[in-house]
Image 1 (tube, helix red, strand yellow):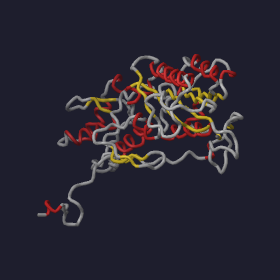
Image 2: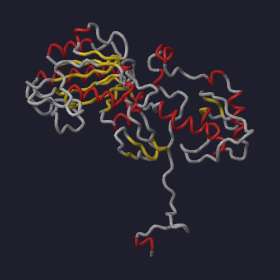
Image 3: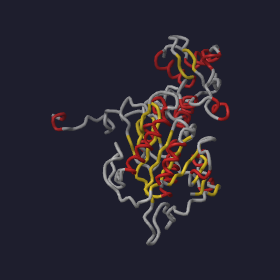
Image 4: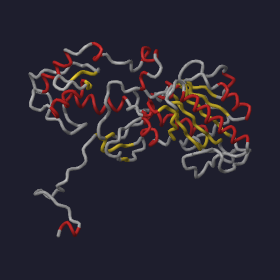
Length: 372
């Protein structure tokens, strides 16, 4: 009867018998503090004035703001260990300061899109597993008591002493407790990490000068297995998302929720910057033909050749990259009268300062140091 009437079976305390979905809750990030913005950013004269604290708004009776297209090569301008949500906020913040954003595209290979942000892993996995508070998987049996051996701080992969599976040091204890619960978990985990070979324990470079030596090494989850189940995910604006069961939270998912349109490049060397150049070429070809994608009502932009726009409207290209392969694309923009703003993630992106209208540093922008 109760099933036919749609009632929910409840336990003795009045609560639904079915347990709520378990998993990590990715909380909304705190905005970057204004005290960090110490570097002046001299905007071009054509940039819209800031009125009532709203960047990118037009002035009284001023000419219409430029239509801004953002092209971001996430392979070379990578969030690294930062919160990618806040990095995306800074990029869009700059774009809105330049005019009206009508398209924001980010390019990367499938491997880069599958990368689980290091910030999420270090915040919601490593600290949880090391402390044993169970906030990530809600499956821990309690924290470490006095006199219990502690796990060595080893970030590499080690073998389970019982089944031989390669795991991160932070997840080994949970693996033993779940699959080999008849054995003493903590002592076996300590022994496995202590007796692990150097090849298993070595960690690939994750940042700094050593990490920059080999391009792309920081974008691979070589030893981390991810976040596990994510129950709730909050964007930078506080919007709640519930990833489907079994979905791994990669960089593509994060940037897509921040308003970017991810575009997948081939899994080859320098594929993302070449694909980005192709996107710029298509935009310039559309402008030459006197058409472009509509600024209002655009639905994700499968192609630029859609709705005609007045030719007298100014256009601005915001390029975020660390590649040196964009010289031809920037030259084409200048010839067509498209204003160019480049955020360089390394030397040589712009050959001459006069080639672009504004040149900014990626590290300063991603870290929220610019006063925009």
